[in-house]
Amino acid sequence: MTTVTELRPAPVIDETIRLLTEHYVFPETAEQVAGLLRQRLADGAYDVDEAEKLAGLVTADLQSVNSDRHLRLKYHADQVPAEQGAANLKAMRRQFDTTLGGVPRVELRDGEVAVLELTPMLFPLEWAAEPLSAALTLVSRAKALILDLRANLGGAPDTVAFVCSYLLDQRTHLNSMYWRAGDRTDQAWSLPYVPGARFGGSKPVYVLTSGATFSAAEELTYNLQQLGRAVIVGESTRGAAHPCKGWTVHPHLEATIPTGRAINPISGTNWEGTGVQPDVACTAADALEHAHTLALARLAD
Image (cartoon, rainbow, N blue to C red; front, top):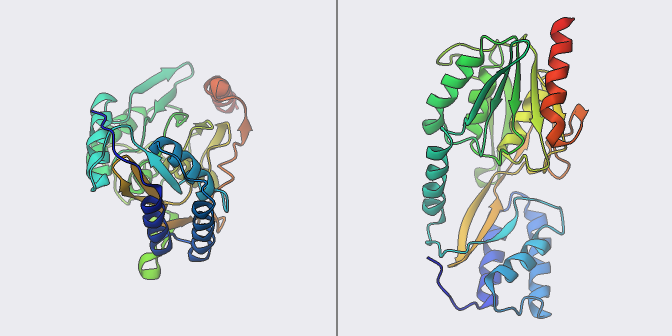
């Protein structure tokens, strides 16, 4: 149910600035952005009476310094609780239950080429391990695999590592994550054991991408590309490599602020701002047919 709540921009901006300076993974950039928000507030740029309009204005300014796609003031039509995570978790669970656990399609095409679609996101591993294991075990018998991430909007890094583990033969360093809190770096590795059968590290893998592929789905794509394990087919992805947290700053507004950044062990960098670039560029709509054709040619060789 949508409710009308009085909007006072100044407290929203002040709280967003506080969260930004305390938590953003790039402290120097946080100070730059905070200064910009203060100036824009003083200039009257945020003198609007609708939360959705304020969200758009502030998000544009938040992203204007370094184009961080995860740095946002996000509008919610329905009033959300102060504990934003609880509301997100409930909505996420609904998505999980209505998409077969994020694996809505498994298909076998000509030439024993399997297609596995993962969407709308890579759900928390404690939920997703069972459906993912079942699907990945099923396609392990195929001669080639097409992993469709064109509509995947992100999710859990542990789930990324879980999927990668089925496509590799040996334990492999996939990614590292630097966190501002504690000034620490955590490493992500493929698993030494997976339930079910692995597809393995030698048969052809193709990953389909679009301009909507985002966040953890980009990490999955980037990991496999950097390892030389998959051919990426489709469009450049959105370019969001910084994991974020959300804080409610108004009953209809959530400040999402990146608290860490990915560091690939091979490239030494990530896909932030640039997106993951496809090895074979084509429209997202044509990506599946392109990948299938590539797979058939590879198998014929």
